[in-house]
Each structure stands twice: as C-alpha cells, then as structure tokens.
Length: 253
Ligand code: NAD
Image (cartoon, rainbow, N blue to C red; front, side):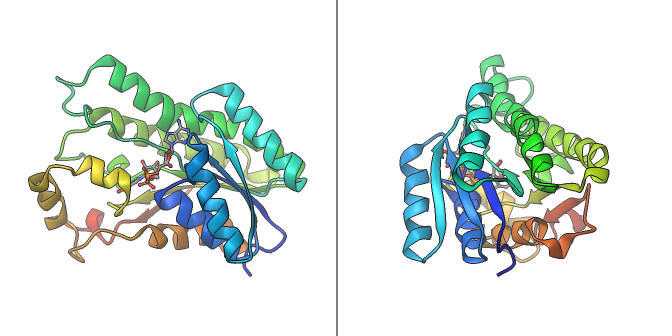
C-alpha cells in the first residue's frame, strides 16, 4: 500500500493513462479524485475502483478553464480533507495538428489551452492545497516529443509538451523547500484512444513502431506504474526530473 493515507487528484482520468493510474493509485491505498471533462467516463473509472474495493469520486472539470480547475481542487479537498498528489495528465491530440505551415490557429490555441494552460491552472490552484497538506508530489504528463522533434508533424502538440516539461522544472525549483516535488512524466507512444487518433493512418502508425526498440507501444498501466513511483514516498529525492518512459526511443538513433 504505497499510497495509504494519501489523497490523489488525477486529470484526464476517464481514459487511458489517467484511468489506469487512478485504478492503481486506489489499489495502493489512495483516495482518488477522478477528474475529466467527460463526467460519464470519470464515473466509469470510479465504478471500476469501487468494484475493486477502493475509494474515489468523479469530478467534471475542463482543465483549460480556471473556474473548473479551482473547483476540482476544492472538491477533492472537500471530499477527503487534503491533497497530497496532483497528477496533471489531461491532454489532447487534434487530428488537424500537423506541420507548422498547415496547422490552423484555432487548433494551436485549443491544444495549448488544454495541454499547457491546463497544467498551469492545475498547478496554480493545486499547489496551495499541497502546501496546506505540508507538501506533496506533482506529476505533469509531458511526452517524449518534448525531447525530440517528431518526424510525424504535430507542431501544437509538440510545443505544448515542451512547455509542460519546462514549466515542471521551474515549479520543482520554486517549491522544493516547501516539501513539494514536481516531475514530468514523458511517455513514449502508449496504446490509448489518444494514440489511436494520432496514428489513425496505418502508414504513420507503422513508421512510429519502427522507431520503438521493443517493437511495441506501451500499455497505459506501464505509465501508471511510473506515475505511482513518482507519487509515492519511494521517489522522495526525485525532483525536477524528466522521467522518460519510452521503451528506449530517445536512446536510439
Ligand atoms: P486519452 O485520450 O486516453 O485520455 C485523455 C483524457 O483526457 C480523456 O479522458 C479526455 O476526456 C480527457 N480530457 C481531454 N480534454 C480535457 C480537458 N479539457 N479537461 C479535462 N480532461 C480532458 O489519452 P492518454 O493517451 O491517456 O493521454 C494522457 C496524457 O498522456 C495526455 O497528456 C497525453 O498527451 C499524454 N501522452 C500520451 C501518449 C500516448 O501515446 N498515448 C504519449 C505521450 C504522452
């Protein structure tokens, strides 16, 4: 029970990495605030947790909206009395995101609003709650594309994830002496609905697969296991890290 007596809030927890993390965190003893813009899928995640004997609540929140971000933190604190782990994980990839020459301004704005501003707002309203609890762990989901240029053009997504990584580093420095750690999880491609959208074109999917040393995409639970380590006290001296979980993509040439 690596998260017993901890309260964790996870955004984008109605699907993929967020859902698997919510399930695993609850199994490890955390009370989990399952946040998603989609209340139905967040509620499904809660049902899965409760069926396994865990404790969770569903909260509807669009992370790109300040009022929602503030309200989700308040709801988690109201339900469980504190917040120890903040996992800013919600993110999108838009099918119309591509080359810098072709990507329209509205696609750029939408992607940056959810993927980057969403993490900013989560931290803006979540850090005071962590401070009230005496400290805590922040995990922000970036991506391996924050570290490498994507051959499959996706300019807004790539830029948003680079921003998440840089922002996480700054936060890790600012709050380290107040017992808050902040780390950026940089997944490689994970078999989730987001990836299916990103690699809907079979040729694009195959091109991506060639560059993954193990020759497969990650499972969402493999990201959840990394997030669990970062959330738990086992990672007590891990701060400001670029926590890459990519099967070795960034090691390859
Ligand atoms: P997913 O599509 O399975 O889940 C994302 C969840 O975020 C969905 O439930 C969706 O409803 C929710 N969401 C979308 N917009 C939201 C908003 N405005 N407010 C709140 N919730 C919102 O995706 P996933 O693959 O699990 O992705 C999770 C994170 O991991 C994302 O930040 C993504 O960019 C990142 N990531 C994914 C991969 C991958 O290959 N799947 C690789 C690297 C990074």
